[in-house]
Length: 254
Image (cartoon, rainbow, N blue to C red; front, side):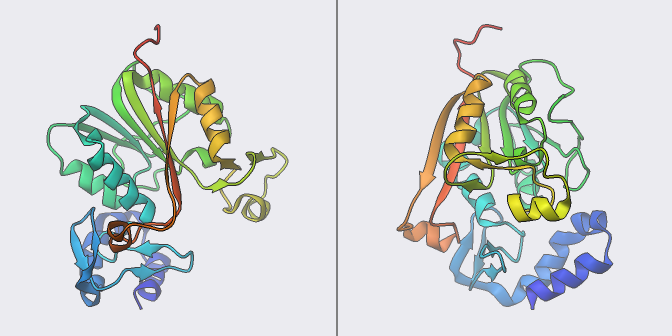
């Protein structure tokens, strides 16, 4: 029922209205999911169950978070990276945008070039309109697979970070090598070959690592494998997941 009502709302209501009023709608729709068996670590809601999507993802009915959002929030907390002063976040979902803006002691800058997400800026990731060394942490989550010139984007991410700063990156992944082909242009073909109509490639974990290293980053790969911990199961996290963290090392010469 939740998925059906959400689908109807997306069909008949303007996207910007949904971004603004989505939390109130979810409070109403999520009432039937209240409980204690599961837990969303972003909105801190206790749940009897998550909403199962056709993609296999488990959605929080109260804040709309997906497993990858809850995993990111988990890592940020465990690594104490939420204390980093200036944070730039590309195309954040409402759940994370709200959670970041409720934090104190940081300066949070959200941006979305296409205007499809909750954000206060609209920076072009291939030409970010800020001075060098502006941020302590950059979050680039499920963005690079949409960007034609990803090497330029990664160079810009490196430029705007302070020395010792971090970029956290995730995309859809495949085994083997990165697959991209500039001849694949139509939405139908991109859906067929890349998995989504507005994607321009599919990365592999090591392929993305190498491109980030070419941009200057020291890269660490975080991975989670089966069997999942009890805590991960309770938060509806994926059994297998990868996340890349690139550091602009202190030895870098400006």
